[in-house]
Image (cartoon, rainbow, N blue to C red; front, side):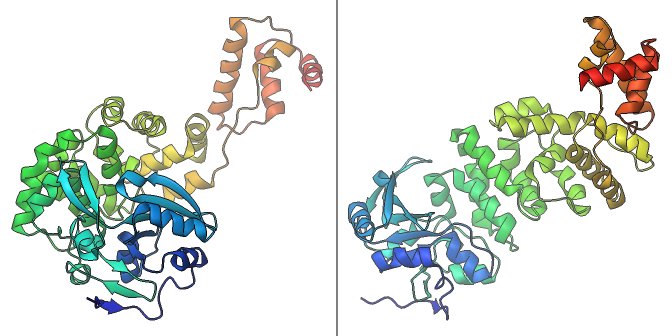
Length: 404
């Protein structure tokens, strides 16, 4: 039976993509699926393009190779290969239906039924598919849900969550980005009741979704709903949702680590280790705790002193956390980064014996430099070094030549 598309986009929105055209030349029946179709319909930028095909994985790979396209068998057991065209990767997956699920992983069988494949997806707005000619196929009401800014599970919410408990967090990720309509009672209850299943997820997957939720342009309502339903307490009890809205209100950037820093009530190291944050993310959280907050009344000298000891971005982030004004951030961004111009070899060059005295003298000069607003140049610092070390200035200048 010939399928009738829900709508046809004219001109086809991806017609100018030459790499995708190579894929379609090899697999004319393939369709773009998932998030790319959703974002195209909303007029949003499309990042990754995934496709589906009714061919089995081996036939898909053979057709691509015959067209001169390199194939990487990234997930053949689940029907996925990656095609490399024009140095870009496209995941292409054979249509599937679930045979068995355990709350996180599924046993699947391949099918030629596009509807069956759509019905196994999580949300209606992610179950759309689009052919090369711009025909969009909608088996679940996803187009209407997009129009209504509604995030809705495909089928029964409780059943879909029981198939994969990660879908609870995915719901809030999509709700924060695409949903303005509140969840219906069945969805609310399914999210609440399914929360204990989150304990079965790895810390890495939990953090991946939480980071995506906190990367949304405005996650305040979504995070508040997570807290209301007990989801936030289950995955991140250290985060206070009430602290997010004030940060959002001052126009802070959509930075997940900055938002965690604003909401965090516990030790950042404990939080980072529990959720398996990267070392870079952990270290930044610690710095955002330990970096002082620049005062609005601070002079340029005071700001330069801070810039000499702390990272510029961390200082700017502290002003967001304290809800300081833009003028303070602009001043921090505009000031040159002060760099103390002396080194241990400069102290040795004037005849100070190697040992603790070198470090003590260098720190003393640096304190003098900071007290003056971190503006003294190398020659001035060398003169101060000579004064504190009781060395004639001429000797210090000779030492400078020797260092050079």
